Image (cartoon, rainbow, N blue to C red; front, side, top):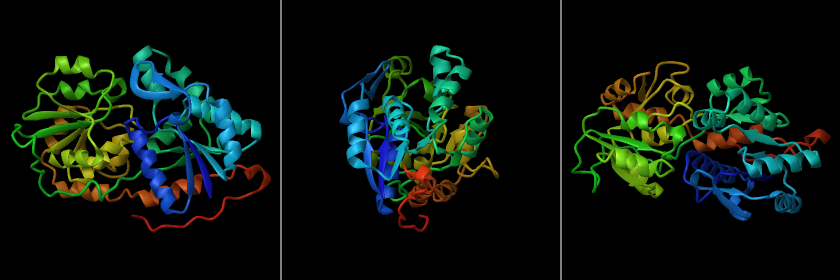
Length: 357
């Protein structure tokens, strides 16, 4: 099966959506799916205003149409609602091709917080984007119910996974050179240093030990000057990041707008428990949407959550992370894809069914 995956988020960007898509593509390839990723780097592109490090395609429609015409994919998936997503949507509608989409990020909340754009306006725009989709994939049941209440249709649950080999388990926090002399406990944040991550809620906490921040973003310079006691580490290669996760005592996830939160799973896979607010992403990752939280602590007081997470056994965090495998996630993704010619009654070619991992 040939899949055209259209995304505004891809390397060299560093964020959870990119990581999710890269891992997904690897899982799909193990299923025998031939994936062509159509990303901003293949087109004229410019930095996103206010978000250095995120490039957006400029007027990609004609070039994208040529690529899709040459490829003649069996399925098309629009991963993001940016310029490439909108251009691909228009092309598919013109060709009368069916396609699937995904809801990765609560951009209406971000636009509301940053620019005071009413939530109803943002969700109306996104509802319009996703309306012709044959399958709108969402990462958590909470997000699915929220979108359903906002009159989105064709919603399909699609959870994500974590590479449990790269993010190896450590029964005790790893003694890592460069961090070994810092006062403990080590409290870790990983992600873009930007508005939607709510990182200042973490930086303001009165915690013993040392706060670590891995990431870059538009708020980096101002926050570094205001919080000089924080250990700022920038962006790390994935193998080095895995060691930093393992060295931390607690991973603090302050975002209230994430639809999932892959960084939580990465930390938990190494054995590091999570402290977070009881909102959609953390509820799903920690399993608190169905039973009690496992591998972390959720509380409306992030300070309380962080201190309580410090007492959790690391093996509990690892066990919860092991419930999320990328092969199973890739197979579920494939099950939601539709043939571009589904209106003509055509079905997708069969792909290999992998055992969950």
